Image (cartoon, rainbow, N blue to C red; front, side, top):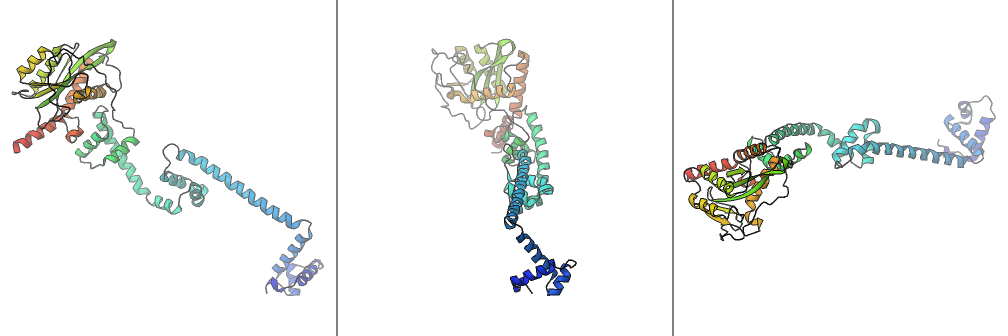
Length: 393
């Protein structure tokens, strides 16, 4: 029978009977009045609490204090969790995967439910994260192996190759990688290619020069090798505030550095030597019938240079005075050479070091360095393939 069946008077009498039976127990008194001994115990406890002044208020306050203490303890626990989590989420690592990793690392101490609530991630997502642990570990191992290959390629390129050329090298080696993955792994392992630096102009214009037409009109392309060339002069800083000077001859079709010349002066022989070297590299027919485009520097507008071009069968072309864009391809080549050889240094220690650095770079440039405009192959490879295709046709 439930306690609601008993009247207040019956309850009071049962309690009074218990208190008037010095040797009585809850069980013996309850048996006498026909109720459960636990029911009697409850009635006695309630009556004693009600008899104390302010008992109800004290009980409510005690319960509220317990709740406050529990809340303070929970807040302190949350603060400790967030303090430990701070190192997981610093910088750019504000990722759900990082939060899941924190939950996994600390679930034995704080419990999954509490951690997911504080970090605002779903428990179902966390358990899916755990299920994919083996796959992630495999990806980490694969990235580390790929990074080793990237470091080798980067080192062999003298630290110059960026994402496009590294991707091309990997694909040629039989690794079908996506350029986005290459970019991600290079960033994660701190592999960085060289970037463009501000150019320094060295052209000395010759206002009195006989006009020569611009046959390129900023179209720095060619359908076949050995038909259109550009050239320019750049300085090579060496120790003691001295300079060497480099003249280049670039094939606009294959991007081959067909000829170059280095000297400690900027006389006309600097550029004619580079043009003659290009003619020699092209074999029996040399440069006959080709166009050579330059700026209006004094060396390129001289009678001596015009005479050498006539002897070699080269048609001269020049851009407008003071307009660097009219010879942008040649200037870009020279800027690339200095960027990839100096690699942030202000100068070479001496002339010999500078000459050897340019020679090494020029050889690598023609035989190994990849070009995006050629489909990520080297100039020599491109010319060999062009010859093969022409022969087959």
